Image (cartoon, rainbow, N blue to C red; front, side, top):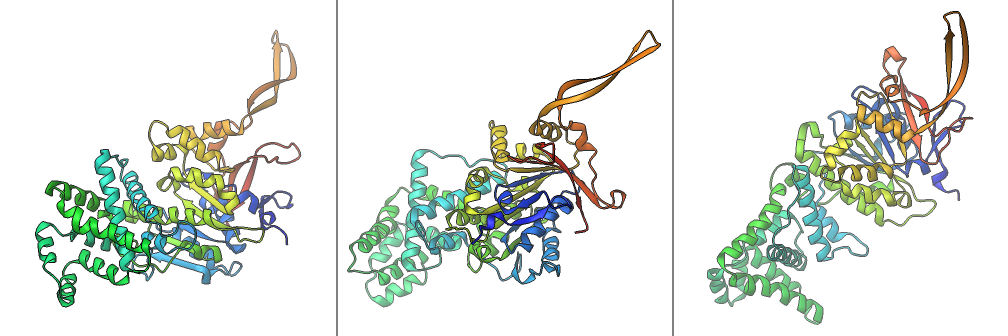
Amino acid sequence: MADLLNNTLFYFDQQKQEPFKVVDAVKGVQIFGGIGSGKTSGSGKWIAKSFLMSGMGGIVLCGKPDEAETWIEYANDPKIGRAKDVIHFKEGTEFFFNPLEYERRRIGEGGGLTSNLTTLFLNLYKLGSRISGGEAKEGEKFWESALKRCLNRVIDLIKMSDEELSVYNMVQIVNSIPDPYEMSIIGNLSADEDLLNYAETNYCFKCAYLADKNLNRNDYKSIRDFDLVYNYFFKEFPKLHNETRTTIQEMFLGLAEPFLSGLLADHFASGLNIIPEMTFEGKVIILDFPVKQYLEAGIYAQSIFKLIWQQATERRSVNESTLPVFLWVDESQYFVNEYDMLFQTTARSSRACTVFLTQNISNYYAALGGAASKAKVDSLLGNLSTKIFHANNDYVTNDWAAKTIGQAYKNISSLNNIGGQQATSGLQQSFNWQVEPRIFTQLKSGGIDNNFVVEGVIVTTGREWGKEKKNFSIKGFSQKI
């Protein structure tokens, strides 16, 4: 069986001599272009439609309000016929993705491990902190350790009770951990009916009661784990100083706060009927929470799904017949993070096709921030093998593009006057930009004035173009495909 990586997605030229193959796509694509440059309706449209026509599944992140409609229109195109594969995930729909319950239930090595669930919960919080404009700060070692210990025990208690691992349930447990007074009441309960009645009023105790009922008393490990959790909530925590107990609880509630109301509470805090693995079977999940409408909540929600999808994609087993998947991110400056650099290093082996579209490189500098922002951006872009530059007035991006393409010797003609009467002409070689920065300001941007053609300068690592075997090519993309 032929390797699917060798399949051609489309051709850059009418002579069909310059293909864009799946193997090019899995190495990553970065598209730059100023507002109105045609990057989405030009090269973006060509690549997006080719993914759908090839049968790929993937996820689409929405920066603009019309992004979802654009992809639905692509899928409904009779030449593509992918409407049945679209999952339109938006507010008010019946779709829910609880990342904690997903991680708890997923099959495979590491699935359901308490330490991994705690790390995921903390990483989600850090992700939200970066989006809201600040890095999550490390607390003092004592409080950091105390918080992680609390998270571990809460997660273990929910798993033992077989309740849903949702943020809401975790909050219920933390808010109902008995204090010394309540422990005195619990200590006087003996009849099963009394225990059941108290479980109806205290969720922490209810989970412990259910965990006790579910306990396999013939398994030493189960007994050990139950004792560890029971002792924490009903012996150790109540004995802590009141200020210590309150501080740990408040730290936890601060982590949980974004998931207690609004979009995240409605679709990302409980329930699980949509999972990343659906894309491996050809489903296209459109995360229709556009940033222009949902602001930080939209970024947070889509970034959560993106992260879990990337991790699921990295875990999957692939062979020559494994269907590739794609990650499509227009307005990518809203969604990039340091994990993208790591993901892209293994994307080819995972058969994942990443496409990022943004106006300029300065967007990435601002998004990734910090003293090492340039190194982070260089790393990210270095792992996106194909770069397409459309019309742009941003001199930083244009200068970077010119440097990326590099310099070469050029023949420059000269005409010299001697004494105002004679003229001599000649050629001399000069080492100069192959594509000068100003050229990027003059590329066609589509529309009726340009016969609906969008021009782009393409650079692909290791690829030679045309008879001259240059490392770049200027191509036209019809907006009417």
